[in-house]
Length: 321
Image (cartoon, rainbow, N blue to C red; front, side):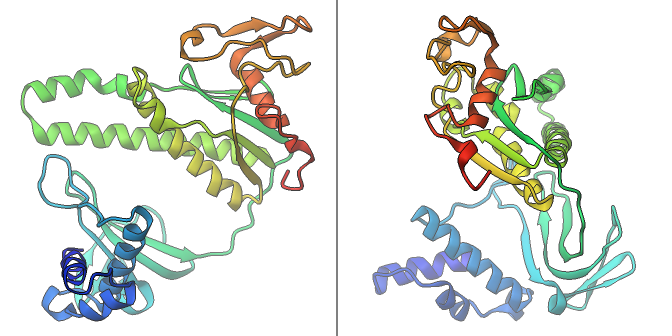
């Protein structure tokens, strides 16, 4: 990545243009000097160009916690760069022992070595396997929140775990004692526990329903308010991403919709009269002034998302659902 950055800065100063991914690959051929496979260098150049073009600036270094160096990432194309030999992997004629948490099945397509914030290295492999996963039935609307992570239109819910709060006392003790390694380990524990919970919750929904509609709530915007700690701990973006690809694996349809007026609109008669804004977050139940139906705030919003009434859309008539 450092080579790509230097090549781009040189090209910007002298030729007044950004080099393409192909140019970067041609100008950074130094696999022997760097001790890397040529496929690794090509993959890094491609990722550098994608990130640069997406954000219109040179990518930042990916820093490890409490360190001035970037985290390690060594991509490769599996058929040429690596070879599995029992409980070890051979890369550039070097043998690395590893622990497999499950057997490697199918044809290996690509992969990478990746380092986490605790300086632990992992081998990630992308394999081509044949899967026949069952498809659920029915449709569900999902309203994301903080009191509960997700409220479903059929009355179900996914409780918010408040994972950071479980470990904040241990984290505060380690920080006051200046134990940096312990702080990193606790942060890694929080991340792993949250990821495991979100995987389980999203998998249960993807297996059960055929059509999944989720509100497009902006976590980044709410993270700038006094609710930042709770929003970041909930992991809305990660939960939506997991739902998206798991729905695809199970043959389900996934859709994100605008959630404007989803809380205010009555799912029974469509009248506007419900609570709105951050100031009314404490109002969890309300009565429609037009039809008299008593609504749970989040369940009503989920039903509006499913029916497409949150922004005046008739999503139930769309071929996508």
